[in-house]
Structures are given as structure tokens and as C-alpha cells.
Length: 139
Image (cartoon, rainbow, N blue to C red; front, side):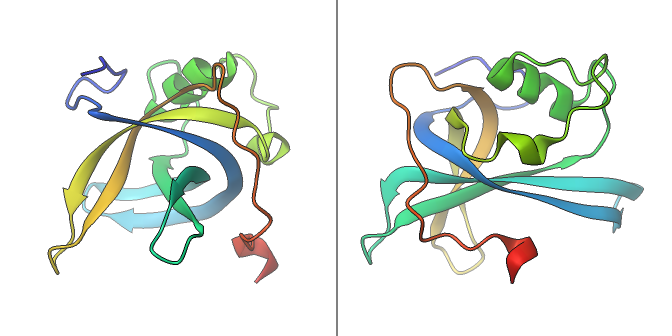
């Protein structure tokens, strides 16, 4: 299993993907209080039952300090330290490939889904957007 920058979990599945959406949720009430939230959504090289690319995502607290999960994942993926580059707009990286470390989680109905734990540079396999995904801001 791959060691992650998230000390609580380990990735057991590696998936190739490409960033297709960045969703800024603004401030959201969570069990731990009101926090700014952002979601990075990736289209993967895995196909669903209909033959379309699977879309997976990870939602972060939208904080840019050096130890935040968002900053650590973006630094591993893009090499950009958000804690010192406050003007970086993640929307500018839509279309950028990534290697995603995941684990499998069950839903309440018993189906399984891929849960993104870590985000890394794509390496040799670079997935391109299929063109089938509609960005949430465009809906």
C-alpha cells in the first residue's frame, strides 16, 4: 500500500485521472463547525457500466496553510505550495492529469465507491478529459 500525506489512511488503489472541475462551496456547516469547502473532481481512466469514465472527487476545507490537506495534496500533485502562493486559482489547472491514491468505501446501500485519499503528479500515464463531463458551474 502507498504511504499517504494523510496519516489516518493508506491508499490501496491507484487510479489515473484528470481534473475536470473545481467547486467552491463557500462556507459550509460541518460537524466541526462552519468551514470554507472546495471540491476537486477528477475523471478517471476507469469506465462505469455504461462505458463512460468514472468521476471521483475529494472535498477539502479550503485552507491554504502549510499543513492543510488541500495544500499538501496540491503540492504533491502540482508542486505548488498554496501556503506561499496565495494567488493560485485551482480552476486554471482543469485538464491537468493526476495519479490518485484511493481506497474503496461502501455506501449505505452496499455499493462501493472510490474515495480519493491522495493526489500525485500523473507520471507516464496522462488521462485527457473525455468531453462527456459537464462542469457544475455550467449547469
